Length: 469
Ligand SMILES: [Zn+2]
Image (cartoon, rainbow, N blue to C red; front, side, top):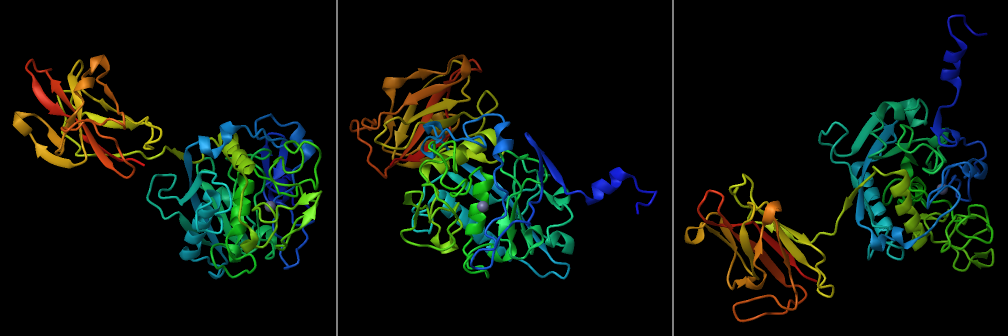
């Protein structure tokens, strides 16, 4: 009987499953365990809900939509910068504090993400493709306060995946990957993990957007063999970044980018693989037993493929545009940072191009110069720190022997910039031009004449040091 004091709407709000508004409709924020079947080791490998092709039909197109992948080389990690995703681990324990995951295992789980998504040499993930996606425990919270990126709560309801905990504790899912470790994902202690929806047909960035992991499967040498080497985490983050199971839709159809897992370089597969057979075949080809998006044991899994990597990078671009910070390739470093010149700011150097000698496309430019200042670059294998040399303002940052780019004397013009193209086959030195060899470090600085006070002052930018490869 409904008490008169409660409206029907209130009752619905209390009893109805929490729903996320996706572009195509309503998707439960916690998947139902109703049809999940445990595998041979007694665990449900993954509760991520299956793709709904009918729902997907009505979703907007992209190069990595719910229904297809266009694996153009524009998404190849080889053509893209590294991107670093901040991760926050919400370790939810039971009321009595049981079900903890210690910091050491959380930290090792993040290491495993980096090994697997980075195909790091010498790690179990080495045979895979480097997605150039990296992960780090968040170092600051949404309010900008310093954090370890590991939070703990004691709450029996949340521990059993109840109570819509994400509404209380999620960090902005647009910019953080929120991972929750529980004692019973979707209420069952034999479910290893899930994401509530794919970013393509759920609502990425909403409070319920998350990865859920059973606590015993988190990190290296976790308790739950054979799911004890962190691959449940890798698999679920794969879903979170738009990948389907390798056995999605069984053998699929003739076009591997629009059927099956929508990926062509993972062979299609009639059913999940729970073990690690050497020569398992179905659908007329060898099964991708060692792929992270299969159901194999943790030690069996070793790779993402190139097309999976491209779909991941596409998913980040289309569906999670605010997640992660691209990190350009590190070239060199500024040193000997100088005092302000007559502009009120120091003039500084910026490196461009690459440090690969074979490319010979390294350049450096000076910025923040007083307008119309004449100047030229100097360089040396050695550094120095000589303040006010010869009555100059500023600091001389390159040591002897010092070469001068007198063939490229420049003028800062109205933008206050002087560029230098560095020919790595002909670096000027007092004894003549020299060829740069791999492993050599060179230091650059720009000398300029600052005449803004009406009389000429000799001055210097900061230094820029780079080791060529
Ligand atoms: Zn899965």
